[in-house]
Image (tube, rainbow, N blue to C red; front, side, top):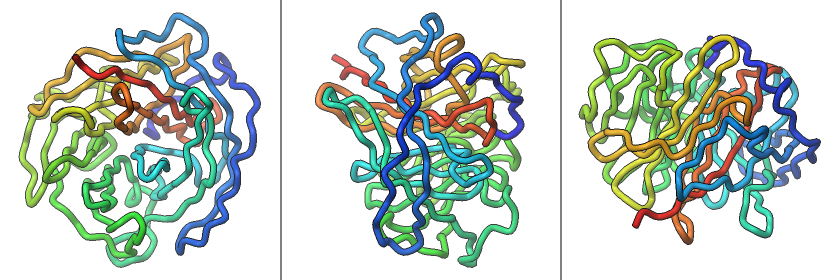
Length: 319
């Protein structure tokens, strides 16, 4: 989120030099190629990473883009046809092809392209806050749904292979406007599940039904907050990523399960200093041969002291 103070991570956690992403050479209407350097990253200095039994790190990359450009502020991601689909808090949609090493670990990203999301009238957003896209879902029929935070709303842009300029408004949870609002979104059987950073979980179809109420006192930014969510492909539950920030440098992330009733399970992974960590806001889950592959992405706020990281973790199937 933009109000987060600068976090001096790159001074502590350097990444190896990488390679420029292979340019996208497609011809889909509305998409523009975007350049970036892709660097391999690991979990960094030991001591700040805790993985539960059955969870293992499965590779990571850093996306390095020119300052001031549109390839910053990635706030959520999902997967489609082997591609990463992400939204930014400046109202852009980003797509790229994931690449893997011979062991199946995340090793690269190519064919990067970008397009602007649009307002209800089909035009550009009038202000950056209007286009503050913080969450993303791809429904069972392939529709792309985007959640906006500053002015809470869920909009469907239609099928990913035929996006429409005029989004269709959907039922939206009763979340207060502002920077602590609608933050996490995922598609499930029969509809969508949404969560607010200030607390509260809803299942939305024709209307939104409260699953878990927001606490009377919203969690502070120095408390754990849900920032991303995706469906567990192996059960009727969900996976979430949470974030905690305490000034001046203490940025942490962790992964957990959420059950159908909105109750959070034990921590699966925790990332904190002095190891690799950042402002993780998005998560995607994909079924694997022996469990579930999770991807998490960080929002660098276009801040030179932060990084856009994409990390992968494999979670063994529950027995």
